[in-house]
Length: 162
Image 1: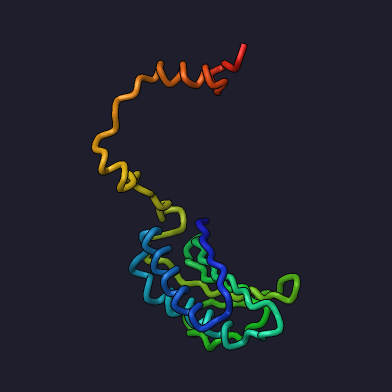
Image 2: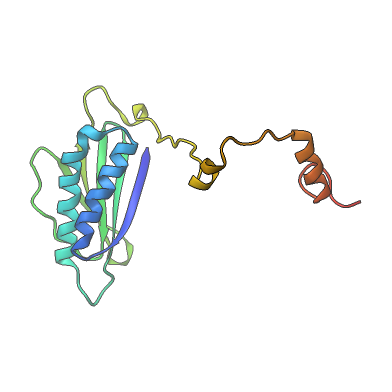
């Protein structure tokens, strides 16, 4: 399963952060077609956690997206939580964790023919910094020269001062 999570403070701005988190994560997982539904669920859970938060206790909430089997699971951990009304089409649940924290979850079915193992891991492209771009192409470096430098510095090439 792929998992990504975000810890937020139970403030009204957490709802917008949850939306951005869902959009970014599903874009990385190439599940953009699920963004609207997943964002609506995640934002509803975060909004309920914000409204239920007690200023005298921990106001941290954790929003987690998990790919498992045939589902995208939206999870929320919060100290106080009142479950918002859910669609009858979605499987939801609640679990009491240690320390008075609740775990609320909601399963969204993946598109037909897609399962968690078919969703590719995110790939990052190698990018050069703007300063490196300004310098132009990277110079050719002789690997033997690098080995001699590492040896002289006591590096990993079996060297070290003798």
